[in-house]
Image (cartoon, rainbow, N blue to C red; front, side, top):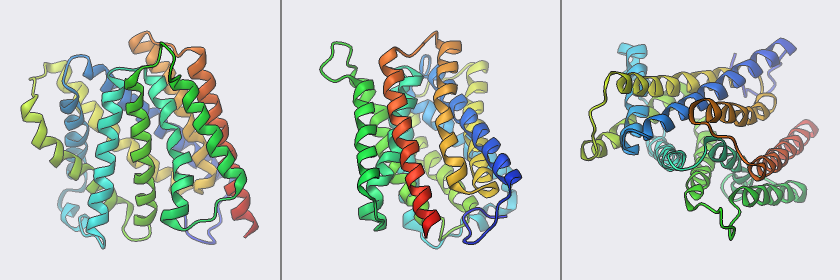
Length: 297
């Protein structure tokens, strides 16, 4: 079954399966981020980025084996590479960000990405966005300002890094939408890992620190969680409509708060929680409006 096919009928069981896949996806994504943050305390960030993509691609290559070459066939090579570069930029900004700010704070700021997708869909996808959704986007940006608190003595410039990651991730999501009508998901997944592995391999020799056994194990885990989480995300959208599973992506803030507390003794302050709640609420309202518009067509 392929999610996103017009006219396809999904059952209640499909919805539950899709939601379960999405919850698992968010848990795996944040596990990867938590391990990456732990690594940045001992190793250079570019080396952690390299591990995320190199081991991701290595595991994919082992899984695909002789099918790897065939999977690389694409009908839009420029867009595949461009999309992959956007994700590398997102990872770079986010990993540098979490090396300096709390995991929950960075994750909350990443929730700005769906709001930006709504805005960017107007010029890039020629979609119609009504005033209610535009107002919700504005409210969501206000939530980001609550988290950042510019002008306050607690304002941290490093928090702008995950916000920048949200911007590049939004454009990445637009590119993913376009590519979904061109190439198979597995092809897109392989290019994502390949481009990231190649680029980071050019940089990592200049900052390399030989890991100990634990370091190698955690680096392998970061790449593994990256690969498996992408697979689970595909399964979520195959099992149920995007409109059903997308809201459960906000469960990432719960995982980020848990890992921040367990691994780094970090707990978000009240302003971060309030700002995150505002962003999530605005995102859910936009999802609600989009769902109604689709249902009325």
